[in-house]
Image 1 (cartoon, helix red, strand yellow):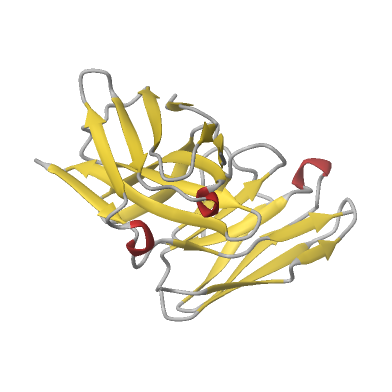
Image 2 (cartoon, rainbow over the protein chains, first blue to last red):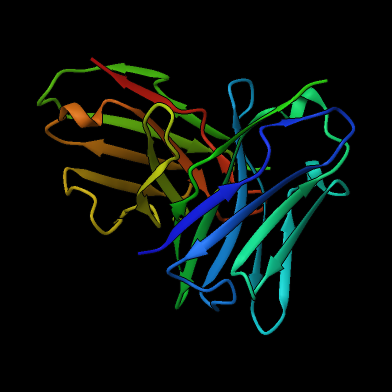
Length: 125
Length: 106
């Protein structure tokens, strides 16, 4: 059974960097069928997909345009985890952040079938 | 970006009812659509993928249909556990986008 466990601070000061980690159990981060997504949810903007990282002979990162330039993903194969860094945060980045696994096999995308528990992040001084 | 419009925003129903939730997209996504259920304080739970394919372990009371720009999630014989918020999500084009949600309440 695949599980994702998130960790990271719940309070970040404006202009600083938000850092979250998602640890994977039951699958491997380098799986050629999986992609590892980051999303967030807030009352004002609903769900926002931030991007994903995946390995297909090499690492690929897809970022949502609205955070491009501020966001970076890292993948740690030795710890089987991936992380999100969002720079220069503002109160507008306050949200519940989720990691999620997406599986694609033989042309079928099975959706975001496994989610982390969520991390509520507040950007405030 | 592909805009997602769900309707209704809120749906009042009773145990045993059959309910339908609509999701319309601003451009064709063929069948690259998923449905999720979310309960308060919990992450979303995947119900359907590729428009009409039931996720393993999800009750067969849930069904999905549609293609192109119009999709429907149907819940038959509504049960107490089904009172939640439902979201559609497209994964045809970046960025993945979600509907605003439909709350199913008693």
